[in-house]
Image 1 (cartoon, rainbow, N blue to C red):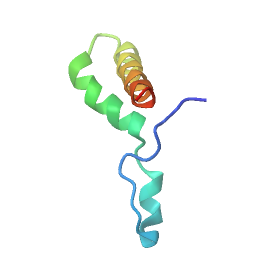
Image 2 (cartoon, one colour):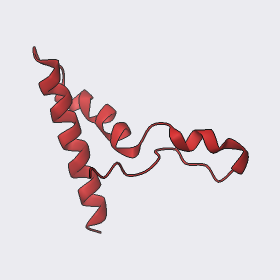
Image 3 (cartoon, helix red, strand yellow):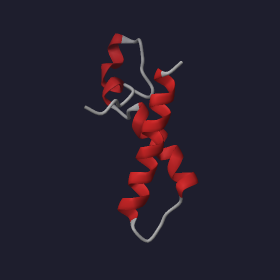
Length: 64
């Protein structure tokens, strides 16, 4: 199972429970990483590289 880091923008407001189902922290990290990875001719490779960086970031958070 892939660690997705949980919600990227969690809320404590019980009336906003829908916000917990949005972007995960892994998705947020990958979106930020794509700026560094850049786009290559193979977009699947670019996306895989961005998620590899995101996974490494989540792993580093666990190592604290």
